[in-house]
Image (cartoon, rainbow, N blue to C red; front, side):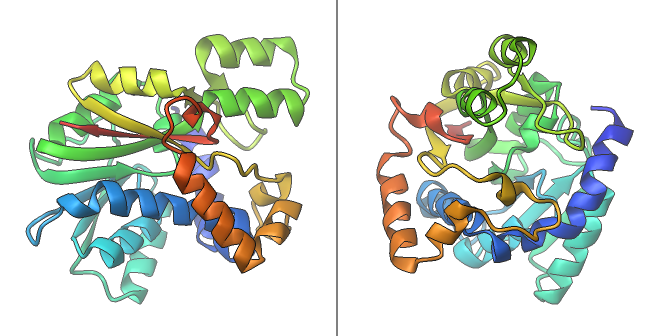
Length: 279
């Protein structure tokens, strides 16, 4: 992706992304599901000596969550200097400078990182979707992981995107064909063209560079965001977020999602596709 296009999206995004869960219960639910998956799939495999990579970790909010949950040092690599500037603020405010490292770099060429450096890795909220050289990205993730290391990597979901483009956007045939045949989606003028994946295509991509896919989650699976949940200024509240503000409903929906979101037959419903693989 062209650097100017990339920066034009992430510069304003860096200023607001950390506040979205304060307004949107939809995003709080999505975050809770992701953290639970990380705790289940990576948590049991960490030791006191483990080091984890957050690929495309942006403002460091997930590095902070993971460090708190798993007690492991985390290295964040991100291409956006604006996102990393915000990460430095967040990490300093949390007094975590000794536990979370930051690298300005591109996932497709992590040349500042040696082979077999990290015990495990995550890539959350679809940095992969912003990368057009998909093979290069997953090859680099494979290279920097130690043998036996686990990877959880996320992409925008192709089938959910098709559902949304038909039902919510009433998109024209050319957009639907591009999404079906090329897996590319354009959500709005301020968002770049993004790569989407199905369960099958993401697992195939990872297997093609040597990973062994284990399972894939759809996240979230049943809950669909409202347009207000994507308000860049975080000033609007969707009806689904209002519904999820009821803590009893939130808990019940969370449990429902976790019971079914790794089912091979329905994971493709997910807004995001989150695949676990091992080197």
